[in-house]
Length: 407
Image (cartoon, rainbow, N blue to C red; front, side, top):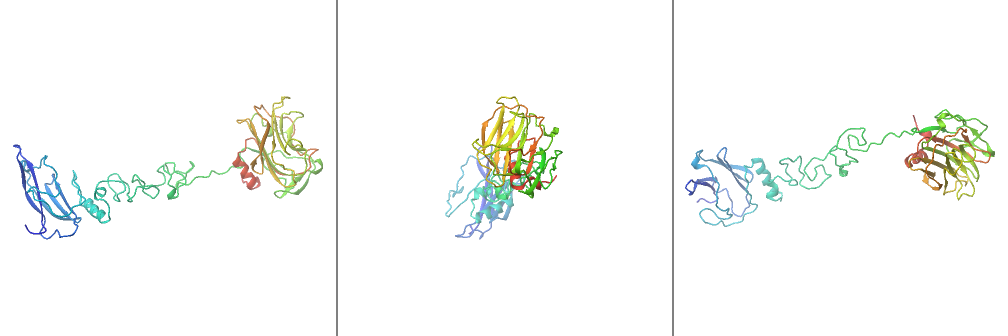
């Protein structure tokens, strides 16, 4: 036979059980196959078109047909698959690699991909069989970047990684992914966390900024009384030296009832006694009170009372002193769900509850007073709230102040 030629045979088993072949065809002409070189050969048989096609190094080489008659239709064979030996019994002398058999007619595009994959050092079988990570987009794959890694645009299931797929791809810069590309649901259309607008007025009842006036800058609880102003934590402050007191009335907005309540203010003092802010009857209340009290294990104490004239009140003293002549930001929070008082100094929870437990209504007909006959000091940026301030709220107030809040 002429050197470098490739022949292809195919056949059938006839009704009598006799094995026969239909003949051979020249798949590759003489001189095509070179000595001592690796060459890529693919042969396909198309039973619909009744064609045998041969490809050499990824490109079409020849096409041969066979008759469309029953006795020449290929049939199931019980012959073994042999690699390196043909029907004549003669053996092949040479090297062979990456052998694959398919039960379909692979396309010219697939054959070219297989050939180029082998040149790139990829396994023939992996490159030939649709498989995620082989570098070829096949079957149901949306992408294939030749690896099985995530967060590089094509995941380990060969699906395109994109905002809205429900998977947080940190490597792609996503902060969140809620499975959609809509805004206003906490994760926006480019998979960045949506920071809700901070409503710094939510739950606010009154705000006294003490900037050379005694007016409530948010509510209706304007205060009366003789007071001086001094340099404050922010602009000016109420100077309550010598027992000066401001009367802020008893508007219905100051009725906390059975709900949550919070007080915040800046204070500068060296005093050890006296009420800084109060709205309570004599004795056990009811009402609220933020005081300085010597001998309580600390120098500030927050009271919330329901006025049963028994022990049904809650109070907590701070574990940090505030009477060192420096400005301090103090917050008292009544959380009815927790049945606890939270006490903060300069943003830190310093709660030391002396008594807590279930508490009824803290409604009081008493007037709200800022200062008292026993207190001497300066007070600034006073707020009252009908909600339990959170640590986040307190941090915002401590760092930025309510004076920077816009409606």
